[in-house]
Length: 190
Image 1 (tube, rainbow, N blue to C red):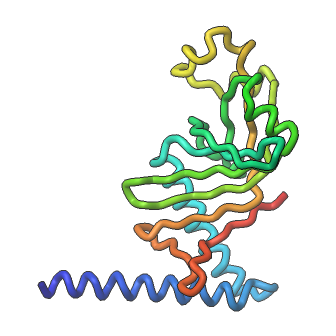
Image 2 (cartoon, rainbow, N blue to C red; image 1 turned 60 degrees about the horizontal axis):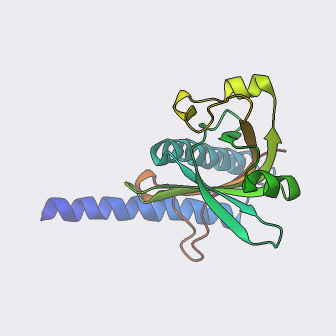
């Protein structure tokens, strides 16, 4: 019983410390002060590392586009891991609804959920349709052959360039604002 109590106390202390750091960053954002900027960079690095782990564990994600009436449309997608700039690629049928929707509104959201740790990543960004033969070769999975029997002809790519990302993972110490539940946000340079 004592061991469980000590473990619980340590976990609570970690949560309180992490919450205090995130709350301080929320109240006093980095504005040219090198110490605050370094702290913010370390928090961003932790969130980015956690996000990559969650994305790998989740496997598939939900790609959300907007249709011509402004309604959100969601579908499961098997994408590639994010690159160093957190750009994420997906293969698709060039005649699919999502391609038409992206051509008319490039704003998309990706949602990854790792059920084992109840962790998630939400990425908002801009999508574009890519038809480059070179990129098709770089972003192809052999297990997709049954979906695209005449590859590369009936195969297109979606490239998502992130604008911002939110991550929650209690097991990784990435938690939201204790008052508002706002998750930590990483903003990507354009």
